[in-house]
Length: 317
Image (cartoon, rainbow, N blue to C red; front, side, top):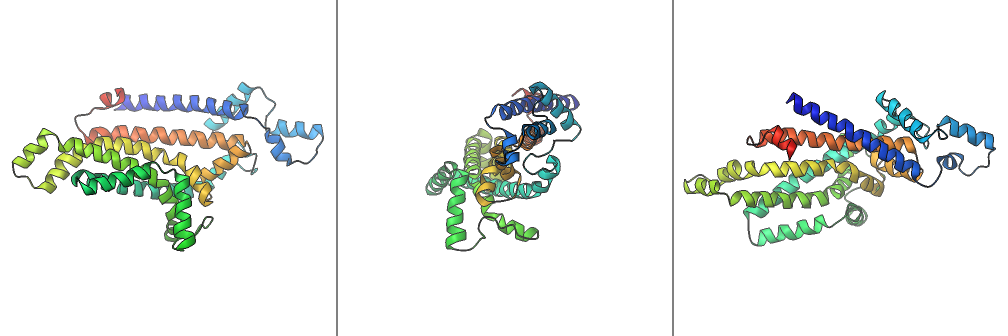
């Protein structure tokens, strides 16, 4: 276990280093100049421009900027936002609770809706299965921004059941109420995908010999489904579901922008638009780290779900 964890943590560090270099390179190669945003079109002297570039180390060689930035990150300093003139860490921290609540809310909807729909389709062949396949197919093919437009038009504008974009709410329950439409928009596509994965895994287990043996011995159908089908199907469900949930952090940028939620995703979109280098780099690193950590947790849970698996075999696969 210790050797496995050390190996995965080393892989995490390697991935973060490669990602940091690629993001740092891509941001600096993109057209435009952050100094132009800082000046907001006001004419200034060349000396003032030079002072601004020196303040943000924009004239340093590329590798010097990169190494200096990596060194600061290792000390917990992500730099200073060009757009907001605030520390990047505190800026992200102030928006992280909204994004975390949105992701958690959406993750619950994905897990419950996807697993329940997949189990229902597998256990009810015929009309129910066809309806679930049709609905999940539509959900899978619907991008989050399309879901956001439909949900706002129907439940906010026409029916008035939920507040429109931009409303934040006060208190935990009220914030959940205001985040319902964004969470649903974020969960629609992944719910359809997880439902199809669950259905396939359940159908695969239903056709296994041990299930037929259990039924022939008179085991109750509920026990067969719970102990012999669903339990053995949890492996692929958890593996694929964990990867999907890790991708929620990426999709939040679309949903938060559509619903005007003040979160990390909308901050990323704003920062990319104005070439706010420190914010883009910090959010990207956090996203990659979260994705790798979720995959690590899934790999650690796999042997607990299916004792036939080992960490060595899991890591090799």
